[in-house]
Length: 187
Image (cartoon, rainbow, N blue to C red; front, side, top):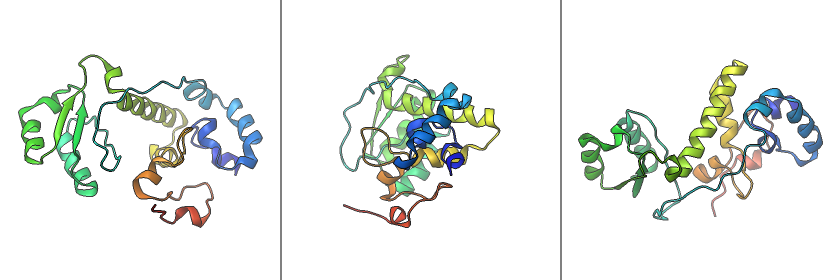
């Protein structure tokens, strides 16, 4: 059980699912070179935010050159967004992309060029994803389980995980979870 809780090397906060295991998990994480290299002691940076509509508090982060195709898939699943904030990558400044957001009736705003801090939330997510990918390369494991585990983590300061905010329930992982947590909870 302890090995499964720490298998994806997401650090202490991510590995703590059961408060009764705290001491054992702390020891395991503190001795793990991979956890220490990628997640230990990383500063909690204050994220910079943009003024965004508060319709349903769902955000989409894309960094793909095939942004329009990827966005159409996401929009088909989650609905048309009210506003999209991107960096000034060419895939977001092209005439084709401008026609896309006008046709689909959503606002598009750019963050400051060459200033990654201006797009703080996306930059933090990119940093986390990069660390997960580097860790998976080092441990020779696939990224999908690591991403699944990360989406189920309840971060400090929040009461729910990313996946709970998206689909109103936790998803099943390799760590045993009570079936009550897997049922949707809509408030």
